[in-house]
Length: 306
Ligand code: CP
Ligand code: NVA
Image (cartoon, rainbow, N blue to C red; front, side, top):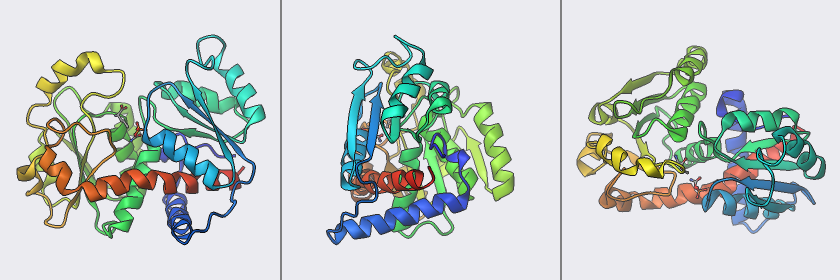
């Protein structure tokens, strides 16, 4: 049985297989074909944090596959508070066919998965957001930019940044990560990335200079400076991230055909200007909608390997 807790757990071939499956399922849907890939299967969706895209895409996705979604907010169940995580996992997994979790602790997610009898999917933790990164890669493939791909991630060394590092490490594309001082990618992530990168010949560089990072890149991306749960640090972060707003001048240093991606929610005037957002919004909204197709493929893949 396979879980999807981090991109690092899969090979390049496996990830490409899921991407191709997403393209196929998306095509079928555009033709009005909703094949029952997962008839009568139940997906439990555990949310300890808010969500627009993850919730709507998973719930709609499992329904379109012939199954049903069960929304469980942290106030509805006892995840890690009323009872041991292992008990919650054993009980939920004895009744449903798949579980998606969004929480604030990758280690808790791993513990949950270690005793689950059904596949567990990471819907965002403090460390990773792999569903988003798979979707971003699908969007890049659709834009025809997956060959000679050079990505610049500008901003916080957070769950999105860590996931870009893992995706590049496995897929073998060039990645430059520019973070302000004090917000760099942690050493344990770099260590794991080095191990994978050596095998896959990836070139990942880290800098505190966003202008250096974007030069000639074909994809420029970022994320909020204030992730969920860090709201109290907002004012300090706005100061610390000065010079990291992606504006048209910064974008002009990238490849002339470069696109800008954002996982959303986006805060115009902070991580990017409204002008940059509007210029690339067709890619950004497509990226958001692709969550539906990508996650349907991932659910089908995990279900098949159970
Ligand atoms: N990008 C993303 O995961 O969005 P939500 O927080 O709305 O799910
Ligand atoms: N880094 C952000 C991503 C939101 C999709 C957060 O964790 O809040």
